[in-house]
Length: 312
Image (cartoon, rainbow, N blue to C red; front, side):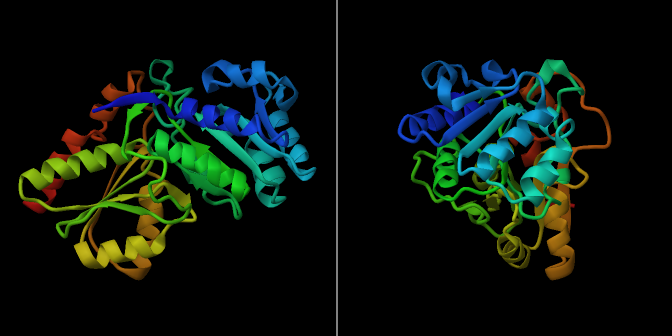
């Protein structure tokens, strides 16, 4: 398991590299340049950096205004605050108004760890995927993160990006791996069932798939990096070709990846499903690995979940 830099750092490094060549790229921070890793950007390109302080509502509104003048705006901060404190501005100023603002929510899911439930972001996908016109993307590693930055600069759009806090293992080996927003990537093929992950759970799905293959159980693994728009065709194919779906998400079981997949399955290709995620409770404090094990999101737990399901 190769550890790399956090996806938040990969994102802001790629943003800075592009901003050196394009003065229309603007980064907006809410007193979070350290946690977002925007310190280098702020020092090197102060004219392209806006610090609003602890004022997420102002940050999103200001970003929409800048975008209306043709700027390529990236507003960055802890995910838990942008999807609570600034929700109206995200809904009205960005999604409804159609301004091309990229909202980078860092330390998403349970990755804030010891800070506990107040800083966990387990509702963001459920809320934001209901906003028409707002894309929701969870890159799974640094390679996909850098690809996402390039994609957003070439094709700006209103988008929410969720990344974690800590370094995660690489799923891909190159920045040139297939990546198209709205199109899932098939990482492993099989017919026993399909594991569908998003963001940091993708590596665990892939690792579980490898362990299962060594046991003679061949599963399909999908990287569902985009929650909105969801790749419905990939879901339907997986349901029809493998017969069972298991979704894995660092998010509440209500309204997130599992719910989005189930909405497609129940109407288009009804098959048995299991959803792995955070139940209806406030997640406790703890490190990401501890909490992944606690909720059965890690690869070893997923292997047991699959074996228990197909053997009963």
